[in-house]
Length: 184
Image (cartoon, rainbow, N blue to C red):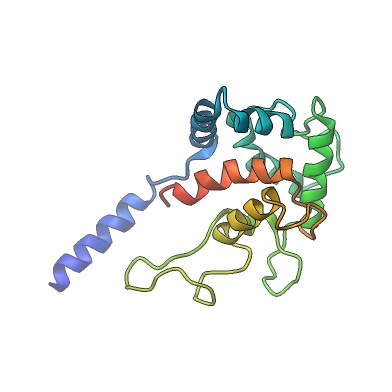
């Protein structure tokens, strides 16, 4: 029995390196599927209007792209990416980044946008995801999906502390749905 557990754990460790996150291509696929499912629907038209014609395929990679702002800040116009062809979206993304700047201190009241992309769930015991458990936070991907849905349903005002407007909520949701389903 112990031998089989060690062999299983060894296999997991050995192959864990090849289980990479989706990366841009995986997120583009998730967004592309959403584009196809929403094509020629009233919801699709509203989404397209809210995100100024950006496809969900493109929107799905934006939350990872803006991580590059971490080094010089969101206001350095010489660094990629900025979405100058969509100035309102660009301004809203910068506001979102400023409200959720990178930090390694989990005790700050201002979360890091990096925390929004994942949650930790144990795989070796029967513990399930729930608030207050190890690895969970009010700023993990599960809570952020709910937060974004709240913004879209007008349950959370667009002028919220996280600076998540409806267009930003759509961009984040498209990305987070990919994040929460990826094998890590």
